[in-house]
Length: 276
Ligand code: G3P
Ligand code: MG
Image (tube, rainbow, N blue to C red; front, side, top):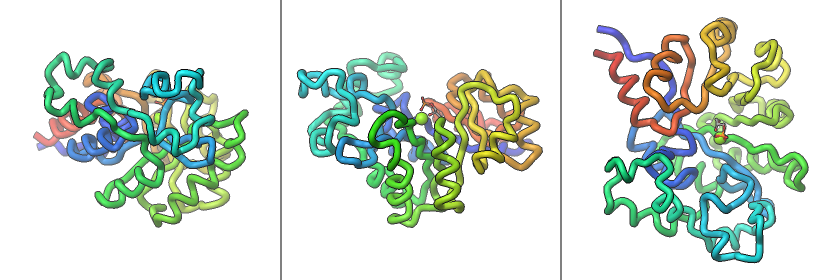
């Protein structure tokens, strides 16, 4: 009998193929599927509250354009938490069906109504849900360079994690590696990941420089040679965003430590298939 590979199934923005991304509905789905952790993106409101959102504006994943028609381009950093609380972050998913899962029948019609009115999630709520379920989370700190939040976002995220005593349940990651170095300096116990969009000539130097435990490359950068050389030095490699079964199998063979996917349900069955 072959054994199940020890690879983390990381639900990207929650189970984003089955529920509106970065909401509690998506986190719940990922949890019930059996993902090992969920990833979410964090940014700051105008009043400095860490909230969960991928884009720097609200247009794609909420009804901000109809509720606040005069606030174009709906930059999240120009809205207070109270204003964001009035928005619906679920209905867009029903009308857009970004992964065609409704059309394919993988989401039942009676489930859809539950997404209407899905609220913005604060980081505190996201962490609390994770802790209540004895689960783990990867919080990606979006790069706020050039905004007033740049100087404070790391401290605010860390305060949230520490207030809830969740240091051991959290991975923090960012494309902004100055944020990673800062986290390492302020709270060295928290695990961190350096996200990369372009391959470094020397990924290990990057890891030593930032103090990160994991190298998180985009899928096209994750060739087996690079993966092996990083893993051999005791670091983790988490690859994003992997949605096809064949790619998942290739990466498993290459020895990655974790895979971010919009389809944790697919990765779950791929990983389970190795135990037969
Ligand atoms: O952390 C992996 C992945 O989330 C990075 O890209 O743009 O989906 O946040 P993005
Ligand atoms: Mg992300």
